[in-house]
Image (cartoon, rainbow, N blue to C red):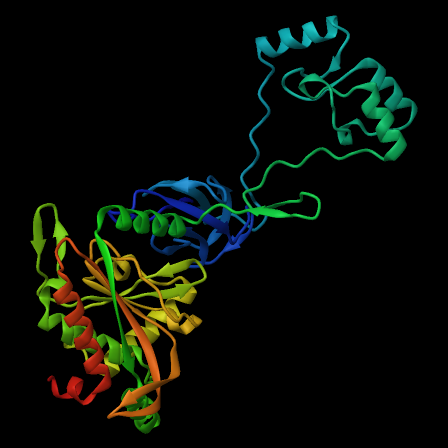
Length: 411
């Protein structure tokens, strides 16, 4: 029985996808639920498993092809044996037009099986090739329409036949220019979507950024004191991101406009706190959403972030996990960034940028002391968020991190 392999129903916000690379070839046996190919949307990579065991007899869509929901991309024969790929279609009989062109070519003295339909060989080139045992199929023609000329055969005799140029591939191609090589690589769908959204954000939002700095010593001391017991109790490491998610939620509760968004001429106030956490992946930056972060414990938040990080590396995040969000946190400090102005993730109205923690000299109670300090940057949409709310909400985040007991006491 022939079973069709189709593209799964894509989410409403995703119109098309790209096939990445087939993991099986035509004629190879496949097991039920075995992943046959990954397809890339502008948000996630999805796996297409085999619906039945059998033999992959036909691949309809090739690597790199664009596909849509429910489109047939291959077929499986559940009764066939391995090696039984779909038979190649028989060559069509020459058309009247092809016969006419061949006759015209012969009258013109051009030796060709099909001029305009194949490679033409000039009579002198054919004779010279026969005299020197040159395989004309490996000689690239330089004449009009790719015709093989006598000079082409002479060059093949002198320096070895030149193989025909390969068909262009979808893989990255390095183009050498003397000592200055270049490489042209097509953007992935995810990268295209990220570029589109960031450009949209800068064009539609009135982005302004406010800065502050936070003393990380209280959080670092608390983490060092309890990290071993925390990991043993909850099965996850105690990081810093959980504290920042808690601090952000506390600040958004005090200043709800920072958690709002613009919809036409309306301001939409969100009565929930869905916090996006920017995560790097092999495919690029993704922002999975921690839903209802205000209802989660510190351990729950750390478990969610750890799970997101693992599945982002594996390309296992779902579209639903990457959709929505009311506020985003981006931690450039993991890569060593000291300062940045993060771009808002639309339709959100604000984003927090964390940076590297460095020991710096600061003044406390009139004395110079060394403290582990981090710069914070909050970019916001000035259309609905005034400077007062932007600055005070960032100060609220700073104060919560510098006194983490407040997060536990909900103060």
